Image 1: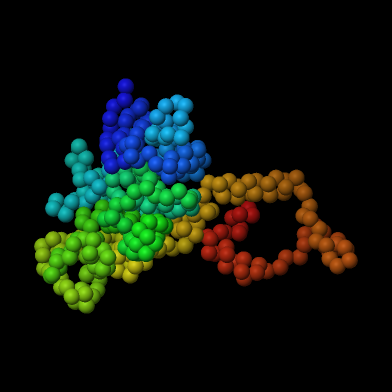
Image 2: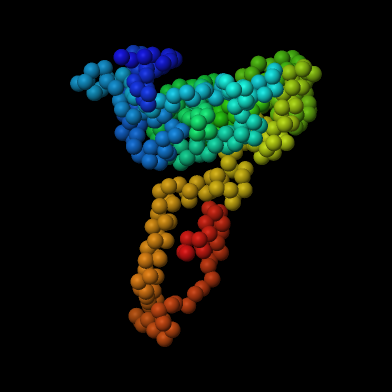
Length: 380
């Protein structure tokens, strides 16, 4: 017997087992576009698990059909069940109580520092998705859960993501990048998401999670609604950093509202806790910068995007295999290959099997530094 777990705009969620859910699309949502993408995702399930792990992603696993014979009529799919994980939206900082929500034992779920740590983890995981040509597209806090047991975020509704050439099938206007929105209108209304639009959406969610209010929550005179603020580049963090000059240029002024003051104090707490994250929010909402939060980290930090290919499991295995083969060759005393000169004569006959060393080209050193490689570590 199936138990209904939740329902939404696209379909309904049913509990299959303690470890698995089923999503069944409403009849009007069973389109050809959705069918092709869903089958592609299900076909890539084990590859995605090997690439991204099983702790943070609810990838579609098995397709479900209207009947067992009609394979063209996909009705939904099964996916991992992350039970007892709460939506990130329900765990946001509360400006009224000046704290994060509490557990049943009365302790806050997050401190300021652990909340910041979770934000970095969200961007780290999404960076890996982007490397795999998966764009979330439909960014909203209901699609991100928090696993308190493993202290990690969980991404759900991945069937709506933009995967390769398969388009995203949902949009939440509140978190839609205004640059993407304006470009989409010029392209006939069709939205083409990118890693940049994901960065903007995640910045909105992360800001609201830590601060307790949308970045576009600001009382001005005359008043502006949140969508108008987003499109005009008006935000609480920009007002804090740039004072009121930019608002006056737009024909508005800052209002000494108690909630404005409370948000400013929370932003000052963020700046004291993590200046890098504070600056990231400012660049995103005030300067239309769309670089990932991780790009602001020092290149020596393992989370920096320039290191992602090295820490990726596939690359790590390749490096480890090369090191193993070199050690095996050294243990077997296999001589180095001869270096042949002009006329086919060996140039190292008179100096053993070790060729004369030359300094590394400057270009090689620049490449190694850019991607965080240490040559000595690779060769030992």
